[in-house]
Image (cartoon, rainbow, N blue to C red; front, side, top):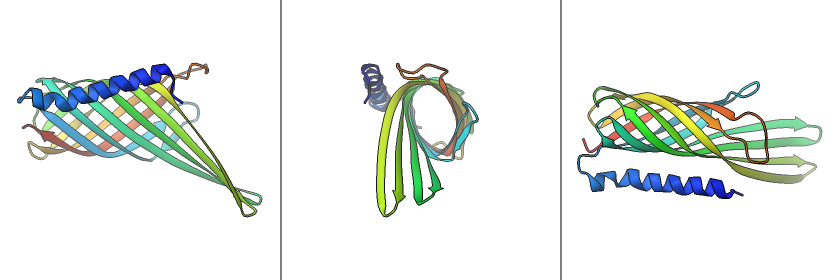
Length: 199
């Protein structure tokens, strides 16, 4: 289960999300962008591991011409299957991130470059099941960690309101309080469609 610190971070993320989505209602001049699409992740600790199946979604709102706030969520999934004498073992791995923070960007145009530093939580969950001799057994576990995620990207806009987003993020994940060692490191590549509202 989540500890008290994780809960406080999630409360902060919800507050940031409310601020972001409420910007247009408080300031007609505010611009909002909504993006979503494909996410590729690579865990770079140790020997490294690719997690090719994933998605991302984000909503951002400008509070100044070149400064804004953004709320970002993503998911990454991988399944490992191993055949053993008399049966098979399957492990399903899931990683979900919930982060928010400030963003700086170039003026809106055909090409818009942005950079951001987001903080929040990453939730890992795993389900392991085994089948053999007509019997299936399974077990699952999950835990939540604090994370810092600097990154950036570029929006290539086909019109004032629709474009393509390409970005990279570098996620640093703190070990839990009962663990020691280095922070987890995840590289993330994202690409998808972005909609600019309020233009």
